[in-house]
Structure formats: structure tokens, C-alpha cells
Length: 159
Image 1 (cartoon, rainbow, N blue to C red):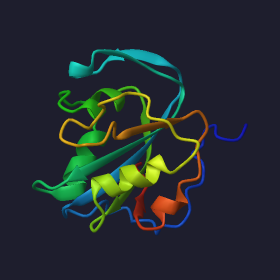
Image 2 (tube, one colour):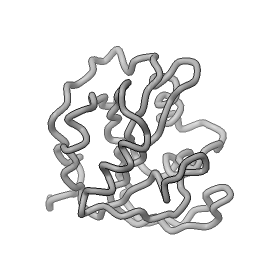
Image 3 (tube, helix red, strand yellow):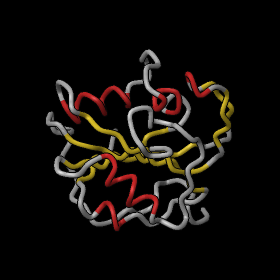
Image 4 (cartoon, rainbow, N blue to C red):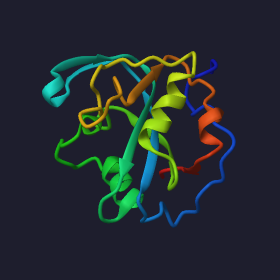
């Protein structure tokens, strides 16, 4: 298997959360997803978009009831109504990892990801309806090193 192909690349620097799952507290999260094949899908108001095979990173926040646990559990469910841009992508891409933190902001995650030279923002406006950021979605053909960010977050591996 070549570098960057499945299984998920190593994103070191965080402690794993046990099988009991994610915390039910307000915070932010980073979904690490792998898309096996390229797809063209309609993403709500953004219209028809092409998603290339590779790795996707999505920065989000969970401030409502149930916090990080409830929001990420929703993202991991296959049977959900498409409400947010990320809902369309999680229908075709497999979530490999969920990184989370209570003390960071969504914009701090986006800012750190912008510093990663191997990442690009494939869809302008994705997940950024209520943000000044160009996009909250990042892409790389091969899984890049993002430990500059993840060393300040904790890891959850969905089953």
C-alpha cells in the first residue's frame, strides 16, 4: 500500500478516548475523512461539486445540547437529513478520526490547517456560512502531517 492510502495515516500527538465515546460538552472538532473514489454531488445551496479521491478535514463547532458527543454522533450516522454541508460529504466519505477540544475555537483550527502546506480548500463556502473563513473543509490527495494542530486536541476513533 502506498503512502497516504488506507488505512488512515498517523496523526500523532493526542491521547485516545476510550470506547465510551466523546464528551457531552461544548467544544470544537476536526473530522478526518477518507473518500475512496471521486464523486460529484449536490451540496445544498453550494450546488453540484466534485470531490476527488483522498483525505478531507472538516473543522466544526458543537455548542448546543449534548455538545461534541451529540454533534459528532450525528455526523457518524448514515441515516440523517442533510442539514449542514458536511452532511452531504459524510454520505460518501468514511470518517476515520474525530479530534476534539473544549478550549479551541473553530477559527483556530481553520487557521492552523491553512498553515499546512499540503492542504487545499476544495469548496469555497463549505461549512463557513456563519464564519469569515473561506471554507472549513480541507483536502489532500495523501494524508498530510497535521500534528501542529492535533497535539492540542484529543482523538476518538469511530468504530
